[in-house]
Image 1: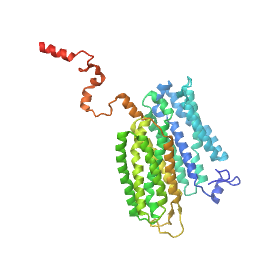
Image 2: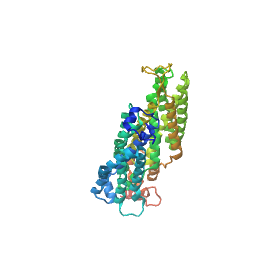
Image 3: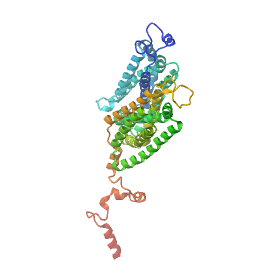
Image 4: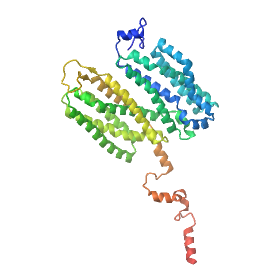
Length: 454
């Protein structure tokens, strides 16, 4: 709900009185909720990013354990005095400016934390780490109280609990990310800068492909509801869902064999996502028409063929661009982020539907008026296109794992018998001692002639 200032009711009435009188709700409230949730998640990740790898942080920065503990305790210490200030800012300055201030504090704190790893000539890493953590702690006091305020001002009474839940639960999600990501990134002391300076390619891949996972999850869950409004039976919706899965598995098999031979991971991913976006637009248009069973069946088949097929390729790229991070962490974090984005996308798509009062040819059996999904499916196509365009233009990465394997062993791709490889490690380590090397004495021949003479 929005007042004259964009984030609170009019100045002449209290928020409670304004809520009782009723306000118009806007679709952009979900965008605001998404921004607030991402801020809360990232802030919680920054809070505990050092704790899971405290022993390696101590050795790398030559700090004490007590100093490392203070990097986490500063969040608690700052929240006591500045929590009161944050309450005043939210109530009297407004939610909008509180969110903007929180975003800048979060950004500045994360940058300051990483300055020591950028060779700027300082000898006091603790000052940078504590300074950055302190700014992030100030941001926490603003973002941690905001979900309830946002729900009260921008959402109707039947959506407030859901909005509050999404905004609040994004904070423990950030803690989960910190506990999974930090140990995965920091295998040894030299990996500390990798934890503080983010991998741009991985972040782009995680956000864009994670959004694709969310779109596909929403498509699978809502397909029957979208089609039944236009008179299609549940049996036909199930048939389209089965085509979606079957062609997806087929596409993944074919594309997997192709990239195994060519190693064109990035090109295959970008082309596949472009084709998926085109099909998503076609679905958004055709799904709003009646009697298009053949067209919908073809579209669902192509949606699975192009969309599902790039999933294994994206997981391989996640490992390649984040190497030497563990494979499980690199792929798993994208999946977790995809599920989180799926929750937000599905809530957003269902929230944008409206009940139609006029009679309809709907076959939905929910006992209520038919829903209008036009805006929702167009938004789904728009999000799919947006994620695709961002990844196509900004995602570039070397294949770090393949390069490391090639430099370690040029013949890494050759099939080698494990038993022979295990029992003859000296052949690879000392090629100059091989009996057929013309530059070394023929020791085997000498030994043989000695044996024959004796």
